[in-house]
Image (cartoon, rainbow, N blue to C red; front, side, top):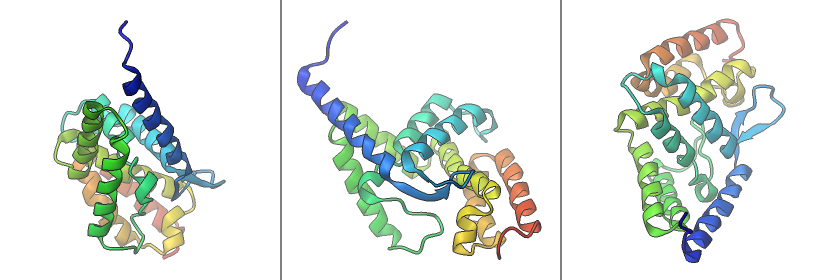
Length: 201
C-alpha cells in the first residue's frame, strides 16, 4: 500500500482536527428528549442516516452514498459562519451566503488541493440543489427538524411562535420537491401536532 506524502497527510489531519469544532456549534433544534440542543455534527450524522434509510422515497432515483456525502459536508461551513435557523431573523441572505462561501474556501482549503476542490464541489452541489441527490438532501435537511419538533413539544416552533401556515410554507416546498411521499407523511404529522393544540399559535 502506498503511503501518502507527509505533507498531504499533515493537511488531511489538520482538516479532520478542524472538523472537531463542528461539535461545538449548537443548533436551535432540541434533542427529541429535550435534554439539550443538538449540535451541527450530530445533525449531519442524523441526516446521513435519514439518507440511507429513506433513499427509496426520493422523487427521482438517487445514489444514497452520494446523498450522504452531501449531507456530511453541508454544514461544515458553520464552523466559521455559525448556524442560521430557518425561523431566525438575522442578516440578509446575501451576507450569510458570502460568509459561508468564505468559510468553505478556508476550511476545505486545509486539504490537499484536489481533495479540497472535491469537497468544495460537494458543498456547492448541496447549496445549488440542482442534482437529484442535492434536491433530496435539501428535503431531508428540512424533514429532520420538522420531525423533531413534532416530537419535542414544538421545539423551535414553540420557541419562535411559528404557526402551522408558516411551517407548511417554510418546510413544504423543499421537502415536496425532493420527495412528495415524505412531505405527505410530514404534513400529516404537522396537522396532527397543531390540531392537538401543542403548536402554541
